[in-house]
Image 1 (cartoon, rainbow, N blue to C red):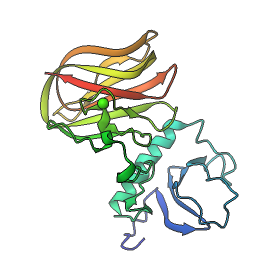
Image 2 (cartoon, rainbow, N blue to C red; image 1 turned 180 degrees about the horizontal axis):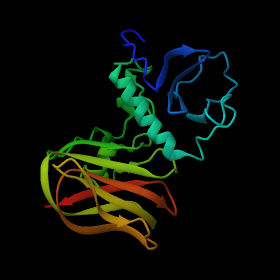
Image 3 (cartoon, protein in one colour; image 1 turned 180 degrees about the vertical axis):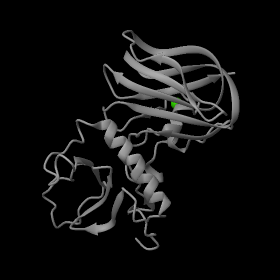
Length: 252
Ligand SMILES: [Ca+2]
C-alpha cells in the first residue's frame, strides 16, 4: 500500500487486494493471533465460471491453526464483526482503494446497492433532520439502515443474513433529551434485544435490557429519560426471521 508508514511494533497486518488477485478480490486482516479474510462479492471474470463465489468471510485462529485449515467464521460471528470493524478502520486510515461494481465502491462487509435505475423508491430515503448518520452491523440489499428512521412503515432495515447479534445505530445531530423509544420490528416473534444510549459524557449506558425476553413482540415502547447523542438497538436473537426494523421513533 502506497504511503504506508512503517510501524514496526504494530500487531495488526493488512493485506488488501482490491484488484483481481488469483482470480478473487479480497482483503485479509491479522490482529492478535486472529485472521479475517473478506472476499468481495465480485464475480469471476469467466476463468473459473464453474466455481461458486467463495464464502464472504473466513476466520482463522492462527495460534491454534497456523495453516488455516479450520474456518471459524460461522461459529464466531462476533469475532468476525470485531475483526471486520478493525479491518475497515485500518483501510479507512490508509485511504485504501476499493473494488467497484459499476460506479459504486464495495466496502468490506457491505452489500452492493442495486443500480439507481432499478433501486426501489424507498432507497432514496434521506435522513430526518435530527439524524446525523445511521449505521448497522450489516444490511440486506435494498434494506438500508436509513429505512429504520425514514418515517415510512413500508420500508425497513434488515441485516444481510440470519446471524446474530446485529445492531442498528443512530447518531443524532446534537445531544437530545430522550424520554423513550418506540421500535417496530418487522416480524412479530420472540426477540431478545438491548437498547443502549451514548451520552455527551462519552459513555454507553444500557437503557433497555430485553436480553432475557421470552415474549413475542413487534412494536415496543420503552420509557427512559436520558441525554443522548447516539442510540443503538442490538438484536441478540429472533426466533424467526432476521434482525429487521421498520420504524424507530425517539420520544421527546
Ligand atoms: Ca421505515
